[in-house]
Image (cartoon, rainbow, N blue to C red):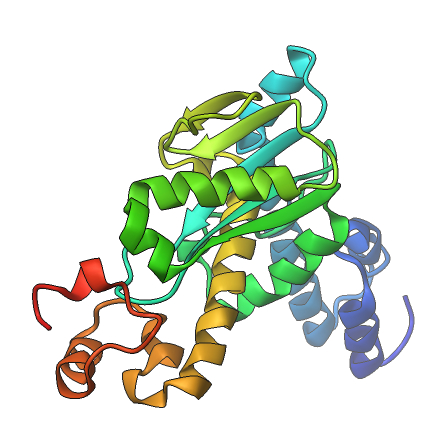
Length: 254
């Protein structure tokens, strides 16, 4: 490949990761120091891509097992917001296309907020179907957090545009559903579908809490997302609870 170093850098920046082997091959006879540096960078990037594909194949194990057993539409489901002092509990259900290995899907807690946001757009664009279930703080106080979590999950499943054949859930067995299911401990890191659900549930709830932060600014919901940080607890003690606080969660210090 002829051209200046800057021209080659520009081509590299526009080359899809899948095409990097051909890009590297085109530079094999160019021994300029700058080109060798680009080759090294491209090789590392491609090797990281291959490692990510292997990881994604590993966490597609449960989905592949389901398909081998005749199930086609496999929904991963996860929740976020069981522990906070304020705000709803949110569940998300996601049905991914077969063999759609979306790079970066992992347990949402292992990802940065910006990475979750970018993956939210990709997952929701490429999924066969996705849906959310939201249970309010008032309902959490009324029926308890465990039952609220189950209700959010059932609502998410019922809101999918297609009914799944099989459900993979993070750590729980969901009562009162007529779909075969399997609970997987730490499933958000072991199942690509559950991982996808954990990401979009987290982003969806975080956006809700950011909106609540505009309505109730004194509690710092934009930063703590309703969780019991020291500053949040001090704000509750100072100002009292707001309408989205879970009264059963704050009774010990209010």
